[in-house]
Length: 235
Image 1 (cartoon, rainbow, N blue to C red):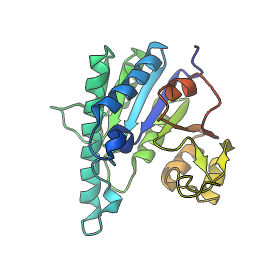
Image 2 (image 1 turned 45 degrees about the vertical axis):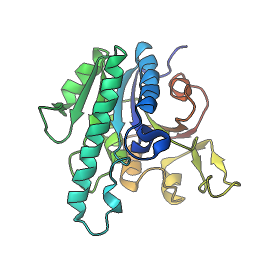
Image 3 (image 1 turned 30 degrees about the vertical axis):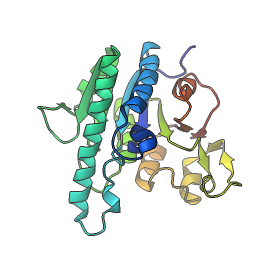
Image 4 (image 1 turned 60 degrees about the vertical axis):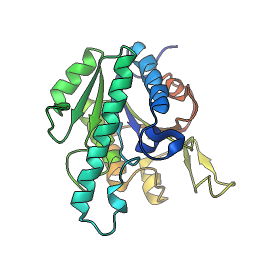
């Protein structure tokens, strides 16, 4: 199969790393994700990955904690996910680099835009962790920012348990309608909570297309990179 894109940002939620357990890291699930990333990399698609940390901690869910402190805890969770994914990829022979927005040089490289681009040009997978390094910003915003910085052609937003964008929660409403294509303005106006408003606006302002797809099917990541009509496209 021939890939449609040369350089992508793949956004993985923390929940996707947890598998059926819901919390923590399920290494069998991580291996499944890593095998798909390996297949994409072998197609010479330059792959940057942004990982969430919701399987460990969600900063916005803490009611009695200082928001900035809570967000920093969430950033550390993304680093753990990034290291687990890196280990799985490298066990499969995929050269991988983890870059962190918060400096922790004993663990990973600091995020440097030009270095990240050079890694991608050499065929290495780059995992961006610790968000953007500041509280009050989500990892969705990180994906949008990194995509703009490295000139990615598309953001692939991998979702667990849902295969696109719906007008309501398909888990609660069996009659929920799936959208095949949307604009960023429609997402904002319809208040579709697929990304936070900051991330949506950043994608819209920089004209970065987004594809929301389900990660539960093992081949879905490869299918979307090859241009198959799955999920929901946002332009």
